[in-house]
Image 1: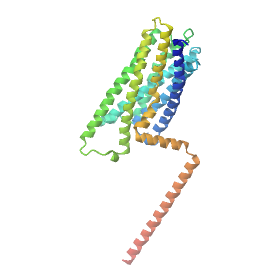
Image 2 (image 1 turned 180 degrees about the vertical axis):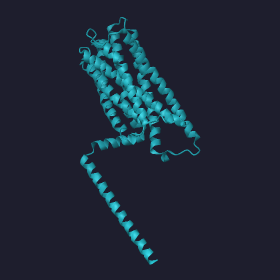
Image 3 (image 1 turned 60 degrees about the vertical axis):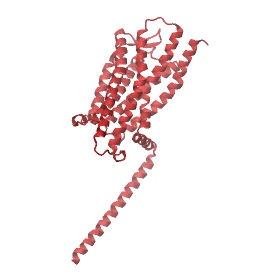
Length: 351
């Protein structure tokens, strides 16, 4: 077996085994994240709104991006180069989902910075209604920005791929959306506001006359602190996984006209599969970072899972027992109140 065939075989097996493992863990993580951030105890947190939308967009990206990649690159079941409608729809959905997910992480980072500001005018932007409006506006903007992909993406039979038929859109997509949208802008904003958040948190802690121990902090304050820690880890993972993706896209764009040997193409194809799979860690890792770095989110995730699989009969039985216990307590309180009232009347009568 030649070296070229070996490299192509490794690329295929990498998509099958690593890709399927990532898909399973990503699917579980995104669904679990959505259930956790929809919990009533987190509904008043604007940061959780951004993270909920990011988890939903990540789920869509994993299904339409990673799963289709596994089928096409691992099992050679690719309909994008033979079906023009699927070629356009798949690229449009993955473009919008990946952009929305990454944007919401950036908004969540800015939200954490605003929550640590001392000025009330900045903290007032930590509103659930503002977060919902920002998420809606972000979704609309990226859906409009992705319309050219529906127009220009075409199946190319000779190359057995789905690619842009417009050189201008290919250039804009590579250097504006991939380099700036997935690379420089998110790295810059997340790094700047992440460092400013840490600076504000340390300053606020140092300016307290009597620092409050962690055990006496309110639940809301502890949730805010742990959400900040979670986002800092997410920033690191996003930057690490996005850098190779941006570099690889620029390299492909610059070497399109270069004549390459079969062995070089096999090497680049293997590198492409590694980079693309690494990029999906952006959408897979959020839940596991939450679970490992936040005790509150970890306990809440367990509670959500237990309640999800709990038998409805058991829940109804518990509610009935609680209501019965509450009724008994109310009856005892009324009896004690009546006894106290009778004793008071007797005392007044004797006097």
